[in-house]
Image (cartoon, one colour):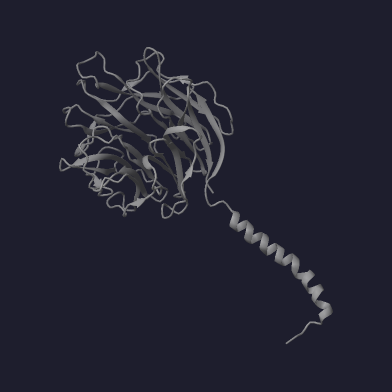
Length: 419
């Protein structure tokens, strides 16, 4: 064994000190490396005292942020759209989409928004049925298209191919890898007490739509549909189905032929939630680059305990994993979960947390394809509702919500960077 003379120990310590400092620095840097999304700047749209819907949002591969929403006017409801370029810190003037067209039917939900692979912008929305009927909920589903990246929009086409005085609403939309636009909605044309989920597609960039297709099963009348397309072209649709005239279950069906036909729906969570009415609580649906299907939804289950859950499928929606509970608070009620997933399987989920005096927006994230999630983090500064989430494939995301700071209603857009 080699022994160092005492007078050489200080020299040895001086020699090793930089090594130790470097090691400590590296360990500290590794510990501080971002394992949760980084919150960036916020954008805001002040609507004044006007009542507004939540925003439908998307972020494209160039980092441009797209938003659409409804506003209540003095005489009628209106539809607006705005694009905020990547890096911009202010919101330009919005485009009044239906200024020369029919009014919006209602503002209790957002419009549906999708951006195509060539930059086309699509908006689906509902207007009151014309001429009016004895059914106060009768509506027409419309599709507006912009082929100049949101600067102007075409006059809307009608999506539903019937003329019955019934509701055609709770719509959602996605664009697949080939640019085909897929739309789903809840339709009461078969009878007021027998709503169904319908679907169609546009093969000509929003110029027309195909014959409407009715999917299997009875549909919960006001839980909005959800749509997502996979890299392999599979299209998925989710809705809440009524089973045995009793249970309200989130289900998913798929199309492997570009939207021509759809499979029978598959139950996602098997919640066995018995509720004598429509809970008005939609599911959220996404697919990652490897084809894993993600579903988040609200349920109260057989014990009437509110919860938001996530389940996943690796076999094209034929089976789903056991559900994973996302909310952790025991003093508030969770509500309206919304989710977005990028190609690598990074997940962002935002939802409302409610109490008799609180109305807040929380978000959580997963970097391992939904296996684990970060602790929920609050986002809002004032009473808030209507969360929405979007991500692109570059690790850029946005979360939006509406804050009510009397007398103003303000749409907030939070920029998010995924690690």
